[in-house]
Length: 164
Image (cartoon, rainbow, N blue to C red):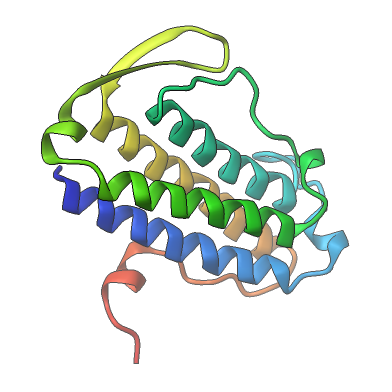
């Protein structure tokens, strides 16, 4: 995997995350906070977790390993989540623009939330973040469907193939 591939997958991730955010913003607060007993409980909680995980990893790539991740109580509503998430995306784009091919294949050490040390190439850490977002977007799509609503089509193919 090269830097261009990583950037393309993050662009897709942002596109798909935005579709899910838009769909969730169209729901009532009760629907947004309904506990589905999966993932991080509600759509609200799952979106907070997704944004928080992207922040945690961005911070690790910048040299800071945190021991806490955000909870649903840290954000009052979906617009608050969206606002913070947009900042994370902008900061990640800036980081990506400053990287070289050599940088993404370099080993990068970090500590997980428990403080345990790990070392992986930056590209593999970035692939994990992209995959993590895909997992939780799928859960969010399932939650939207369980509410009787039509979820957005967020598969990679829909990003790659222009729609008519």
